[in-house]
Structure formats: structure tokens, C-alpha cells
Image 1 (tube, rainbow, N blue to C red):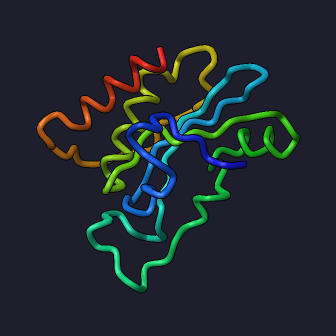
Image 2 (tube, rainbow, N blue to C red):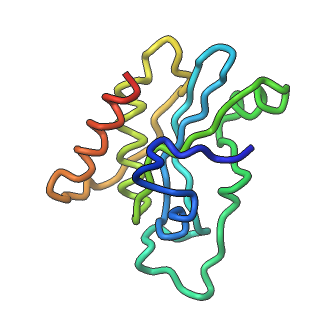
Length: 141
């Protein structure tokens, strides 16, 4: 299953390699239930500025989810769509957005995230992450 890009005017699939991580949404098309997650593009790389020749790519292309229930539904043949919502140069920024989205949408009846698993510092960036969150929230609502 190929990744869709939520904002094709902002990103292309080739832009993934210029980032450390991305936030994604898996949506089951027959029920409209959805799940938010974060995926690293490279193994053990948290900041794309530290990318080296020895850095190895993760399994992001074929990746589905860390959620057992999401994987089970997909393996059972339930139709789904996987979409990259936004890409970030650091895992920290991507994790912040994932956490915010789950915090906001997590109790919605169609959201199937079951937990928020993060503890991290907040990176101040003159409102960039906040503006991304506002944009995605508006477009998902």
C-alpha cells in the first residue's frame, strides 16, 4: 500500500528522505475510523541534520503501524488508506504533533488510538509546530 500525501502542494513522497520523521494517519475506509502515528525515516536517527553515509533507512515504505489492533485489521483484509500528514526534520517535532493530534482527537468516537506514549521537551520554533497543528486540525475537522 502506497503512502498518500495529505498536502501534495507542500510535500512529495521524495521529500521524506529530507526529514527524520513524519506523522501519519491510517483510515479504515469502510468505517472512517482512524489512527495517528509517527514514523522515523531512518533507523536510530532523531535529527536529519545528523544524517551520514552510514545511516540506514527504516522500513517506512511498507510500514503500517505499531498498533496491534490496526495491524490485525489490515492483515484481515479490511480496506484502509495510509496518509502522511506532515514531515519534520526532527523526531521530537513529529512526536509533538502526534501527541497533540491524539490529545485533541483521541476521544472522538472514530479515533482508535488507545494511548499517548511520550515524554519529551517542547522545542520552541516561533510557532511553526503550532501553525502546522492548527492547519491539520482545521482540515481534519
